[in-house]
Length: 292
Length: 327
Image 1 (cartoon, each protein chain N blue to C red):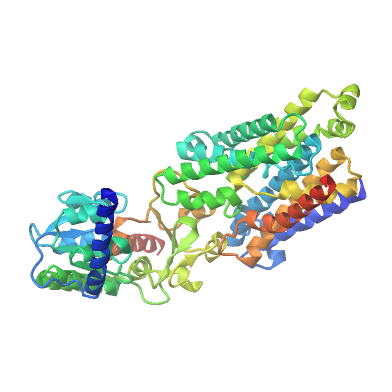
Image 2 (spheres, each protein chain N blue to C red; image 1 turned 180 degrees about the vertical axis):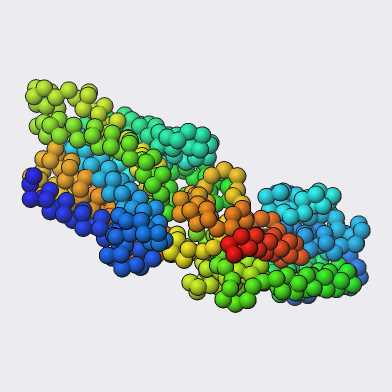
């Protein structure tokens, strides 16, 4: 009897709070004053925040950032408290700003907004051009606009420098990005743009897969690319990744530029992609230089 | 060789040729076959030898395995509803294969994968035969099959869900429905020895199964060793189904539909039905695999979907007929 009354009261409180929270959802997530206790709950926003946050400003990052499999900044991430993106644990951290990705759990974000926690949501970067934009936005929400502007300037300068090293149209070797289940990314995706920026033409683009798509193994073999770039495999075997060990892929990798894998630097739209582009560019120079 | 066998062999040969020349690369048929036999240094040879040839071989031998195993089980149990897929043998084999992959046994030892699938298949078939009883009445057989099938399927899903690999969970579909996409010659060498052994074992059942149509007592009077017959059936079925499932997942309905379709042509003699069903099964799986490549080349449509679309209506028809007979 008493228990049920408590539940009814609690339900009533949640229902009453819901409309108010829904109105807050429309804000841009930029706090009026510099946030002092920031929690980031997405691998990619973690990296942007770690790069731009002031001393002591960032409190927690997602647990994924502390795992070498996907994170490019493991050591740095270990200085912060890890979170698993659960509303309860994040609320108890008493943050004055939560930064999330657009793929973060919506119900979690709605719950945090209802509890009056400011939430800034970042779309993942889908191109190299998006990276400057995300850096500026991260600068805005952290009130670190100057640091962001300096980082954007450095990023643009180095990207332009790398672009001068790329060979002209018609003289570019072809490359195929190939990952689990035969997924191949094209020129309208971030990994695809990393490859084109390093001076390659993408096989996926020839097949109309600019946004990425499944490229049958036969078509990959017939296109006979100069380089096949596969990702790092996950622990434990899976049939989806077995295709990357198929004799055809092994054969295509044999005489093309070897040892190039899409690693942690490729997974997020941060200035770290510049390192990926530089490595890929060097591999191209080494291979084409040897051929001439 | 009867006219039926000649016709089926011709059909299988034609389908093998079609399986070799049809694919997303879309090269001229003549060039494709030439590239298969002569290494001309073009990527087409790579496609033919490393992609299409293993796929055609696997469709051929796995189809033959499933067809013959279905015919053998139906002959032994004298029950047209028996089929390794339906009574849970394939599902148990899949569980064995998944366990081998996830525990690292498959990587540690070359034949770990097919042997683990074989062990799963043996357990499955023994469990079903034990539950269904020696005569294998329809109702107990199907009920036991459903239980073993669902349990093995659930455990397979559990193992894949617990895997640290993020792709593993999505592979539940492969293990439940089966596919020959992107298989290589490695898979052929993995599966072929066990399949050959299993087919050879099942082929020895011809006389025993024919004698069994007269009843168990009459068969024994004719000199058929029933215990040995049963053991050979279990071992043969487990070997072909285990090896097939290990590389191609669970492909249902082939062992059910093919013997059913061919039975009238062999005068309902279960012995003669064995090799006819092997050829018929090969033809059905080759055709199904060509179909998935033509209809949705980039989507890896699962083989089990196609065989089920053909097989389920036939199965329903069978149940309907059985019901009328019982009434």
